[in-house]
Length: 317
Image 1 (cartoon, rainbow, N blue to C red):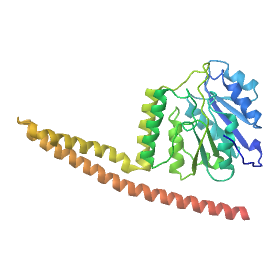
Image 2 (image 1 turned 60 degrees about the horizontal axis):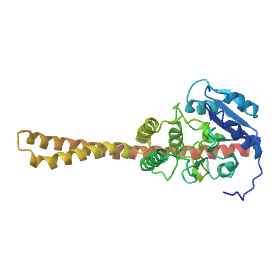
Image 3 (image 1 turned 30 degrees about the vertical axis):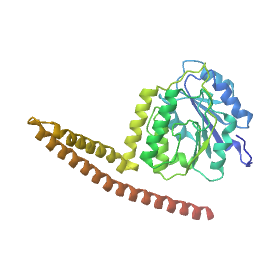
């Protein structure tokens, strides 16, 4: 990818944030990659690594902070709370993303085209970057997310992102682990922020860097988080899942009813009516909650628009 735009800005206004855990084998290359393109305000948050990640990062010229808790989410929350720069670019410390592609993410933020830019790894993946299981899992999770949140995003789990300070300050994040990326994206959507997705190059993980992701366990947690968060943003989807399940059970019971010749056949008929009724109630609840959620989002947008107008008026004085 090439970058034909040139913007004049102070690169010290950009904080390069790298959450790490046992990244000794890759962190130096990541830090030097940013320094080679002129970014020296580099902050490494270490999750109590057992190797020499902290020493290597400090020797490479980064500011190193040992996070007070555990998990990538906790590191992000702690770094976001301490942020003073106008912009932040977050990247994984495992060497799978290219520091020299920072402008693809940062420029839309600098130009005011987005509050939050996410790098799409799936679009720019190189051979071997994803295992077959990880690629399938990522695609399933992203498909589920798009259905739950009416979103066009293709890679909600990416670790390469750019933000404005205002975007970060508006977020209310609580997750400590890998679910944080899902919560982060949901928060941006809920707060009405402009999210832009751009393709980035995604490389295979260096052999000397171990993955901390457990595909089955973390995939389940992320999927459950998506479903849980949907009750606020898209309650029709949240209730609709259970409604569909209830109707499906009812239809199965109706289909089985003619084949039940013993006295239990009448129970199947009663049960089918029961599940159909539950399905209908859940669907109605979903519609009512969806109307409430839509009104809430409109009210929030109106409040945000009014706040921006007040800030403009204040800046004029």
